[in-house]
Image (tube, rainbow, N blue to C red; front, side, top):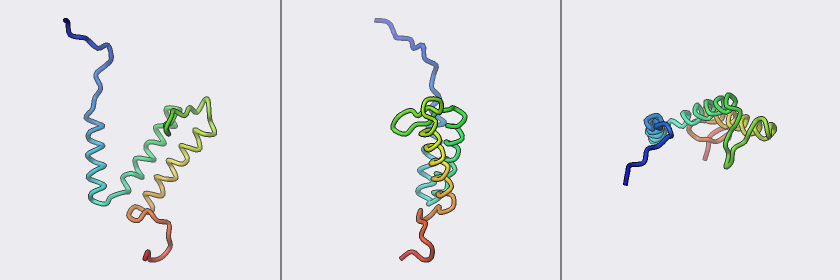
Length: 96
């Protein structure tokens, strides 16, 4: 038997591992605003790529209304997480 050679390029996994470690550290330290930043960066990436993913691939060209609804939702969720990073609540006043 001979060793199989792959024609696919090598995948760099260190960026994914670094982000996962960073997300765990941010979560454990209570810095949930990091998720807001990532959602906004992801929305910008989706706009640049012309597609997004929510359970399935959403293409700007094929389904523009759904695409923009998803991207605008990512931006809104990101802004909410930046504005309300610790409680995640839109409640005004003390939370009981």
